[in-house]
Picture 1 (cartoon, one colour):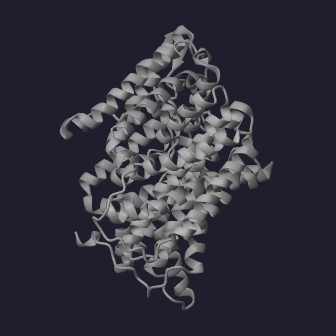
Picture 2 (cartoon, one colour; picture 1 turned 90 degrees about the vertical axis):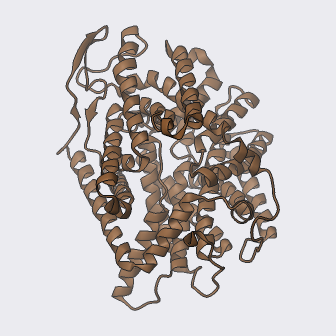
Picture 3 (cartoon, rainbow, N blue to C red; picture 1 turned 180 degrees about the horizontal axis):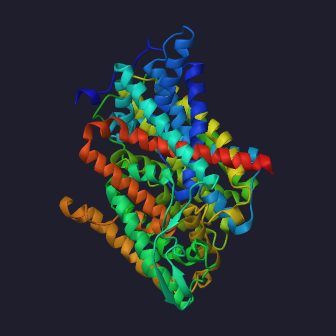
Amino acid sequence: MASLQPAPLDRTMRQLTVRAVATGMVLGGLLSLCNLYSGLKIGWSNNMSVTAALLGFAFWRAMSAVRPMAPFTMLENNLNQTAASAGAAISSAGLVAPIPALTLLDGTSLSWPLLALWTFSVCCVGIVVAIGLRRQMLLVDRLPFPSGIASAETLKEMYASGKEAVARVWMLVGAGALAAAVKVAEHLKLVGKVALPGRYAGAAGSVSAGNLTLAVEPNLLMVGIGGLIGLRAGLSLLLGAIVAYVVLAPIALGEGWAVAGAPDAAWFIPLNKWLLWPGVAMMVTSALTSFAFSWRSIAGAFRRTQGGGSTEDTGEVSRTWWLRGAAVALVLSVLLQVALFDIFWPIAVLGVLVSFVLAIVAGRVAGETNVTPIGAMGKVTQLLFGALAPGQVAPNLMAANVTGGAASQCADLLHDLKTGYLLGAMPRYQALAQVMGALAGACIGSAAYLILIPDPQTMLLTEEWPAPAVATWKAVAEVFKQGFHAMPGGAGWAILIAGAAGSALAIAERTLPARARRWVPSPSALGLAFVLPAYNAISMCFGAVVAATCERVTPRWSTRFLVVAAAGLIAGESLAGVGIAIDGMLAR
């Protein structure tokens, strides 16, 4: 298709300007709050490239109406979304998984400057890898990087038809305002959860559906996420909630593996202490099995072919600057691991080198499938350092922190470089924008984390903050630290069965014919439902069903507005939730 052909390098249109990078840094910092909030709620984050491009376009269009100024060009907006997506992705640098998991296990916590510096150093490892991979993966191998194509097409459409972009911005703002209003109403106790009917008598006494977290909640963030993940994942979440809370939870209560809570409360916390083990097992085995099927991509990541595309390097980061950047990223990461977490320096060096390698793999897989295997990459490192440093929590979690965060930033920049490649942008300008965006995200995201979760040991893995990614990383680290005897009764068999089911479903996803494959439940979504309250899964399933219905009934409207509306719901509730948390902190 003509629209997918790369544009020649544009040396005339404004690109690298202070306003372009500053806009991306501000938007990236703000959008990092959304991913931080949703990450601690459900363990997932969202790509904010299109959202940032729409907001940047709308802001500078409004500013030009107030006072005459040069138009905010398409390539300036490309730098804006490059910086903003990097900042928004800061949650993957450890803030919603290994960092709080380490606090839960040994009490380690970092002050804001150190936390910001640590997360920024993690991002730098991934950025350096992505810069080094650009030529091979984009120009030689011509990997698709679908999110990068989507961003490029959105920018082209936006600047070809300004009215369409304005309409999508209004949809984004309207959906965000609605979600924020509902969140405030919930905070003021004007609305609340409604438990489903039903009750049974068992060994734990009379148990209601509400005790098992089977309820409907006024949570538009979950509805928005459901609208983005698709019908298969949404229905899989609902199935997982039924298996976990209707089938397994009563068994665990009856056998004494889990304890009952207060009669009028939801028992998420006591049930989660048992359910997280089969849930984590299913997510880990399915992720690693799916990753194993990507062996061609893995092999391709280390095979440097010749030809197959243009090798012009005009506008790229020079080899000298790349080598300097790689050295700085390596040294900074090692020094911080030694200073902050007391990790033996040879292990720290090995951890960064392994992260370089796995970031290459993650970038390749993301380029071919549009899915970045952040969790799987982290688990590979956890398994490695579980063997190299047995019984030590910090190397297990923080070396994997570097791997997961580097994989995320590497894939993010490669998607953005694909966008720039299609639009004629300067690669080195995008690399600079990515670094600045990551810096803004690290500073703002780290501050927001400390404000939202001042006491992780009492606030996380609760009904308010389920933090499933934290539960997953913590559970894996605990096994390597304490051994399987530390698990609750019945968890061993549950792990074996759930782990086998996760692998079997992952194999079915990859081997069955396409017609049969769509009926296979998503093992990652099934496992995730085990570590969330059931009402979260119900809300996300509802959002997925609504989105699928809209796509069938109003396909044209859905093409224009569905993703934007879902992103608005996520952003609106997230920002309102952060605002409520800040207000509560000031009130104290």
